[in-house]
Structure formats: structure tokens, C-alpha cells
Length: 206
Length: 225
Image 1 (cartoon, rainbow over the protein chains, first blue to last red):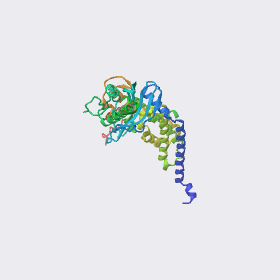
Image 2: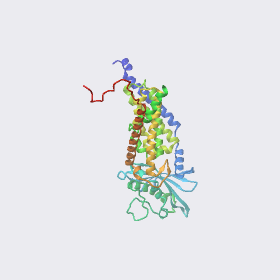
Image 3: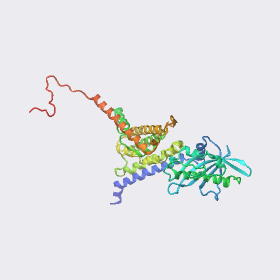
Image 4: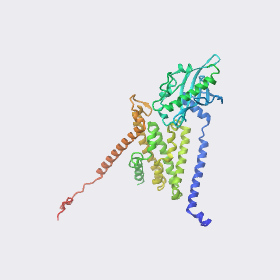
């Protein structure tokens, strides 16, 4: 086949049409990606509106690299809510489905008051689901499950941590039927936030 | 003449070839997204938009795209439209974007869209393809919303997110419940459309009259020798 024949062939035409379609599609997507870009600030505002049901002002708090990882999971980001003085903590809890390798990421609103020598934890105001890795039964964790974290504030203020163990002796068990491992990862995500608050944000009060 | 043709295309998309209840296409999204009526409706409208856009573009390019590479070309066009839709939903309707989750990008491989591109848009003019896309999409939206309403009402005791009763049957929020409702809906839809078709044919049937003086035809099997 000569070069001239190749350029006249159906193979060349097919290739040229496909490349043209891909280029035009790529250009179109690049333009729209720029037009419809969502900034980090907008994403944060959306999350805050989702959690609080209204627009609130928040200041980012630097996460201490030393304490970001603990036995329960990882602290991703923290915001101080200037409207009510609470902390909004984004954490990823370990110990989920997939032989403990799966994770659940949550937003936890930690309520606190100014005490002697720092801030004292008074409880958990709200827990909102964000994402997961490998949790097939994550939809089993209902609204009632997440509300369960806000109903044990006395025990939390006394220094307790949540667990997903039916046989645990304390009253801090929060487990969704049929999704014990995902429940464990969710409990660990909340515990990560509690642990970080007690170690760092409380300023030595706890 | 044109109105009749467009009416037939629309009727085919909505009823005769209803993607969900007659062709049983796009089942994965149907079962996965129909836990609530709002999500089902959102999914249906999203598929309708992608169907309309992809059908129009494919119809416009039908004489340019060589037959040998038509499927990859269709997939690229459909994937582009779905990605655009994702960007728009994430920007302007984030709640629906979050609710649709993995099923939104999976619209790319929805058999309904590729099926209409291959069977209709690649062989027909732009307006016909646009009408086919909208009709097929609305047929799918109707089916998805119907399943969503039933599952939400029985499984969660609510109607389009509004709580209407405390009694719920958890089975209907599960996959098995989705299959159950889907099967019942298919059976009822086929029953109703078949009866309607029989009634339509009966209405059109004419009684043949025997002309005066003519002998009636012998009954089969009783022919005289």
C-alpha cells in the first residue's frame, strides 16, 4: 500500500474521525471543567450547610502532624465554628469491612465549653457521613445510627469512647444490625475526633 | 403526515418499546436507584438529557462516522455527555449528585443509550432522533419513578420524601424487594398494554358481510367433496 493509498483508505478515515471526535470532546470537557469548577471554599460551605442546615462561618485549624494519626484512625481536617464555638472535625476511622482494611470518613461536631486551663468537651452535637472505602453495607448505617453518637454525651464528657461490640460492658455501644464492621469503622472515626480533641484541642483541660 | 410519524416515534419510546418495562434495559440503575422516588426521578431525567444530546449528536454525525468505528465513536460521545452532566449536577444540584453516586458515571454503559444510538439515531434524521431520545427517556423516567414511589412508600413509609405512615416493610428497600417490585410492574405494564392493544384492534376490526345470494364459505375441516 502506498502512502497515497493509505490516506485514501477507510482505515485512515476511521482513525481520523475517531481522533477528531476525541479531540473535540476533550476540548469541550476542558472548557466546561473550567466554567463549572468548584473551589475548596465552595465545597466547605456546602458541607457546613449540609451539617448545620444554614450558612455558618468557620476557621480552619491546623492539624498537628504528630497527633493526626491515632489508634482509631486519622484526622483529615478541623474547623472552628465561630458562630457557636464548637469544632467540626473530619476523620477517617479504621477497622471497617474488608478484613479491617476498609474505612469510613465522617464529619463530627464536637461541642465544648471554655473551662479552667482549656476547653472542656461537653459532647457530640452531630455526626454526618462523608465517604467510605470498601463498605458494601454502608447504607445500613441509618440516620438513627448517626444520631446514636449524640445521645451519650454524659459518658463522652466523662472520657468514654464508642465501640461496636455487643458484649462491651459500658453503655457506649453503637452498632447497626447487619453492618458490624462498618459500624466499627464509623465508631472509630468518631473516636478519632474525640481522641484528638482530648489530646490537642482541649489545651490540657482533659 | 409528519405529526403522525413523530407521534408514532414518541408512542414507541414511551409505551411500545418502553426501555424498562418492555425491553428490560438499564436494569442495574433501575434496581439501584429506585429506593426513593426523588432519586428515581432524578436518574430518569439525567438519562433523558444524555439520550437527547447523544442522539442528536450521533444523528448529526451519522454520515461522517465510518461504520467500522461507530461503536467506539458512540461511546466517546455518550461518555462526553455523561461527564458534562456530572459537572453540571455537581455544580448546581449537589444533593442529587451525591445521591446518584456511582450510578451517575455508569450511565455511560446504560444499554438504553447505546441501544437507541445504534438502533435509531445512527439511521435517522436529527429531529426524529431527538424525539426518540426524549420519548425513550421519559418512558424510562416514568418506569423508574413508578418503581421508586412504590418502594419508598412500602419500604420507608414516605412519598417523595414526605412521611405519610409509620408502618414500613424493610424488604422493599433491599435488592430482593427491588426485583419483586420490578417484576410486578413489568407484569402489570405488559398486561395493561396488551389489553389496550387488543381493544384497539377490536375497535378497528370490520365485520365482513356476505353479499346477497352468495354462499357462505364452508367451515374448515367440513369441506364438501
